Length: 200
Image (cartoon, rainbow, N blue to C red; front, side):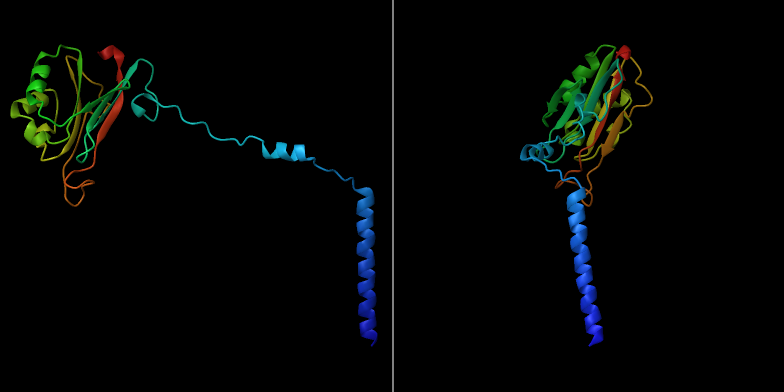
């Protein structure tokens, strides 16, 4: 039929036009090839990555200003995680034995200009004698008399000078069976900051 003839003619013309277009592109568009060495070079180009953050003293997120001491006080948590105190990157791990008498002797004999950092593990409510708690209260603690069985507690105080008003000086977290992170223990708590060197 005439319709099929027209379709066949159109198909032949389209194929012929496509062939001519391909010949034109091959003749007039410059061909560039990439050698294997160049290809390997592309593959080996360095990938830009963000620099690893520099570690700060006592694992602070940002450094303390010049002329400041860095500190961090971390309470204990569970049976295995001891309380830790870091001062100027010097770490002290505290065991959970009874140091009440030693603490009272130290607090009474500490000279003016002494910075005091304290933390509990297991168990400050029973192992700290009332006389020791009173001495800590005299240093400015608002929570030491509220400490309960296995409470997590941290505190920073000064003897003979005043700490800056803008630092957190104390924190407490009581054991709660519905909220505890560990079996019978609340989550650890911490305070950290910077103390101007000229205060001490």
